[in-house]
Image (tube, rainbow over all chains, first blue to last red):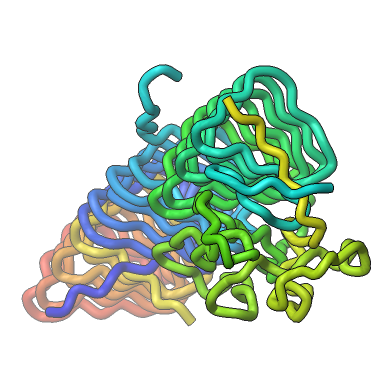
Length: 112
Length: 217
Length: 104
């Protein structure tokens, strides 16, 4: 059966811990902790107040919490994020609102 | 102002270029764009745009209007308009700017503070974006007046739909000069320059006034 | 309208509230409070008290269910807990242990 990502709809609010190993799309609200072994998309209506551990993350909505990803974290133009982000790749698109820290691995030339 | 041509110097409109063999230690300030292909240690205060080319290294406290980082920046960066770290950019330090763009491939470690984001209106990615047109191509081919033809954008791998409109001419001749300066002395700007509609409002570059000062080592 | 689906590898430990339909294929522990319909599919495991308009259980539910309209235990449904709803349907094959209250 084709694997379609799960969707947590706009009208749903989850308070607690959410974990899983499949792709997830959140359009509603989550407060607590998210731990996903796959890609997470937070849509424009998504409101997350949680620490997030994911494979990769795409944010179009609002996130407040710490973000730890194994791959790309991307904040789209509509995103509003207050978080400390730790990931090997981070993209902030023009228009995204962000406040927090970003920890990527930075290779500096010797002698700096 | 006489324009100096030579290795490491790019003749261009109102931009100061620090060539890739040049190292500056101290405070740099000014009201024009600064293009760093070499190294600056100390402090940079500009009322315009700082462009750090892929070969550039800036280890300094930076206060500018806009910054486009395609090289290495170590230090805090404060911009009144925007900061962009391009695919080849590497930065360690804190960024304070209302608009920050980090392109896939960039490396960054530090904090980002856009101010009061709660009350920031959702902004459509603006068509006005600093054009990092002059990405390190110091050797201006003699004939080429225009600052080395730079790739339209320092390679943004996945241009999000919102990408600002690229400079009118694909060949990316120096982006249109800022409207403000248009009237000024265009001492015979290269044809392209003058015809360019002032598109990219966001960033710098432009102007005619070929005046380049480069300190040689 | 998005149809919320909690996939089968998803585990939620906490409280879910909402006003849209919810389909559970994964695991939910805690509380569920919906003003729409809840469907617990075969692979779904719910250890929670449920308040909803309508529930259809084909999976495993441990907890009390209060439904405004109807509760259906399908043939592969298994439930331990109390049901309070005006209409109840327990299919042949379903396994149920608990109290039923159909007072209107």
